[in-house]
Amino acid sequence: MKPIAHIKEKFDGTFEIQDLEDHLKHTALLSVSFAAQFDNPECKIIPLNITKTSLIKLDIDEAGLDQTDYRYMNAIIDRFNGGPVGLNAIAASISEDPTTLEDVTEPYLLQEGFIVRTPRGRMVTEKAYRHLGKEK
Image (cartoon, rainbow, N blue to C red; front, side):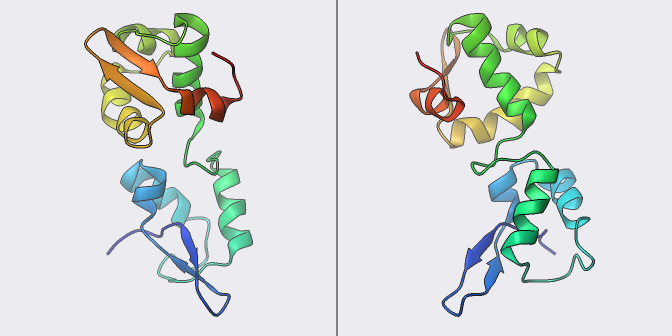
């Protein structure tokens, strides 16, 4: 069984749930947390207002980013001038485990184009600067 997902508006004005894992990136744990917001985790249609409220409660923005993503990108920008910077330095600066960052946080940020990996380290992209409302 797939977890609940983000919504897609249908032609009749209702909303259909699509793969939450694609939208939220933290797979099972976050999907279960999201599903717990509803009376019936088996439901296939969730109203837009409930979905938005649930994502707000989970501190997930419209781009699917959570507070760890923000801390990660802000650290690269504010402490390391946008990069390049090594994973261990980022992890130490935000008090996170490097393996967790590499396995959970980075894949989505890479996929969505917020960061890039270079031979010299991680760098934030123009997209990250825009999303965070910062200037390069």
